[in-house]
Structure formats: structure tokens, C-alpha cells
Amino acid sequence: MNDKVSTARRKAALETPTSLGAEATRDISGALNALAADFFALYLKTKNFHWHVSGPHFRDYHLLLDEQADQLYATTDPIAERVRKLGGTTLHSSGHIARPQRVSDNDADYVTPLDMLAELKEDNARLADRMRETHGVCDEHGDVATASLLEVWIDEAERRTWFLFEASRRGEAPGR
Ligand SMILES: [Fe+2]
Image (cartoon, rainbow, N blue to C red):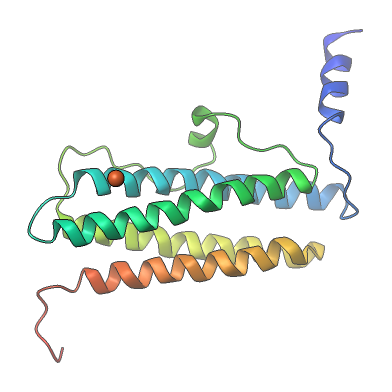
């Protein structure tokens, strides 16, 4: 048996049965894997800021970012498992995450607390946009189950965006 045939046989073993069709598997899995990579990347960035935030609002920000990181991390597994239910394969490694990831890393030594909140607010808003796009892909293929999960995750991303927005308004004059 040549290498190509044996690889094809091993891959066939991972083709979970689904009635949605090969195109749906390809399109939705591709979109979900990119989202899974974004969730891992944003999870780690949120933890990064949780670990490195400093200043007078340390406790508030430190705890807020921990809550948000937990929520992001909790979403990675259902996304990856959804891909497997659709007959696709998902992320294999941290190197694999880096390829489709659209969330930019922030390796700066020091970031001000307000810059941290602003950056995460943007990242979560963009994440919600990309989930809405993925919802459209699901609609095209009639994948109501993935669409329904996305609706919850979009709401959660919007909640994180809201909290980051409000938390970053500290110091603004009332009535503005
Ligand atoms: Fe912690």
C-alpha cells in the first residue's frame, strides 16, 4: 500500500457520518476551525492581560479578565467537537492555531490597563462579526445546530465587549 492510499484510509476513519453533505463539512469546518483558533488566541491574550495588568484598578480588571478568559476557553471544546460532528478534523497543536488565527498577538512588555481593555473590546467585537459571518455559512447549508450554538457565543462576545467598554469608561465625567 503506498503512502497516499494509507493516508486516505486513515483520514476516512475520521469521517464522522453526517447528512449535511461534503460541501457543508468543508465550508462550516473551515469557518469553525478559524474561529477555534481565534478563541484560543483571544483566550491567551486575555490571560496575558490578566497576568500583566497593573495599577489602581488591578483587582477589578484582573478578575474581569479571568472571567472572560474562562468563558473563551470553555467555548473552544464545543467548537472543535462541532467540527468533528460534521465530519471534519480540527486543531492539532499550538502551531496549527497560529495559521488560521485572525486575532493579533500582543507580546509587548508593558500595556496600559486602558489600552488592554480597548484592544480586547475590539477583538471581541471582531470575533462577534466573524461568528455572524459563520452563521451565514451555516444558514446556506441548513446547519441549524451550529447556527444555534453560534447565537449563544455571539451573545457572550457582545457581553464581553459591553463589560470591556463600560470598564474602560473610568474617569470620564458624568453626563457625557
Ligand atoms: Fe489567574
